[in-house]
Image 1 (cartoon, rainbow, N blue to C red):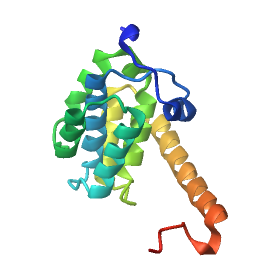
Image 2 (cartoon, one colour):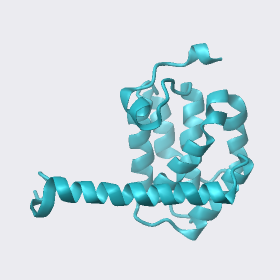
Image 3 (cartoon, helix red, strand yellow):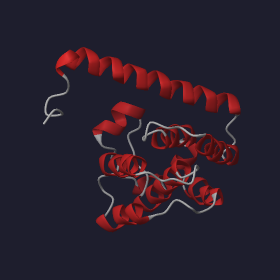
Length: 168
């Protein structure tokens, strides 16, 4: 099955160390899983959807416009049972289950709120993937560390002047 994979964009290799991307159909299921988790509190916010769409466009530029539109209109209300389709459909997706949970945390927190409902949905999905609570906590801590590092970086780069163009 690996021969159908397209080369990964540089950013995906830089970020995750992988050199292949999921087939488009599998990527759509992956991104729907992120939207499902972000909707774990019953509120799929514009910031959460924008994070997922932006990620899809950046990390899977080979996805068709109709696939991106499918994500734009997906309401995030299906069951976590759909995760079985993802994990059992593709060996790379199965190996990437920690990345899936990490990206679900990122998407869920994109609106600056990582709610108990989102955490519960992520944990339900993680359980289906055989991921322990200890690993989930480790991924949540990694997210918090990376968020703090990003904030520190922005402060160093732009200081009191702020990000160029943001004051317009």
